Image 1 (tube, helix red, strand yellow):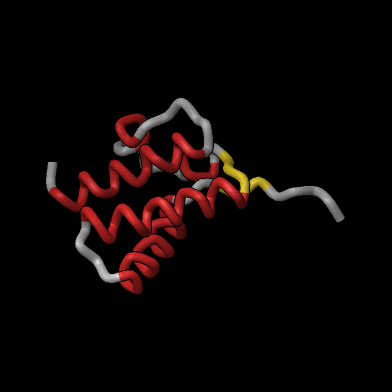
Image 2: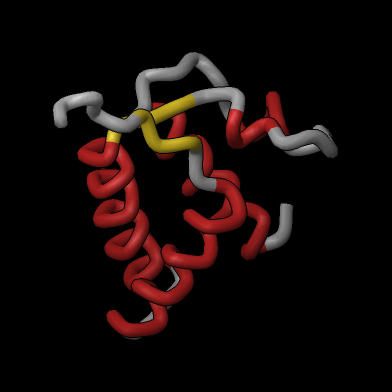
Length: 89
């Protein structure tokens, strides 16, 4: 497995873990559909995952803080689970 694929695998696995779904990167990597909208996570879970991902990218990806923030923004946009909105007012 190439380094970039390994990083993406770890980020997606962590996303599903934080969102409390029993799914992994291996389950979705070959899918061509919109799998990322078939599961949901809360805004708090999304923020927890992005914070974890930024630190992970700084350590494993050897990125600056700004690069890690931008990269997580793109990964969230491309692969982030649908956000479960709170129905309060």
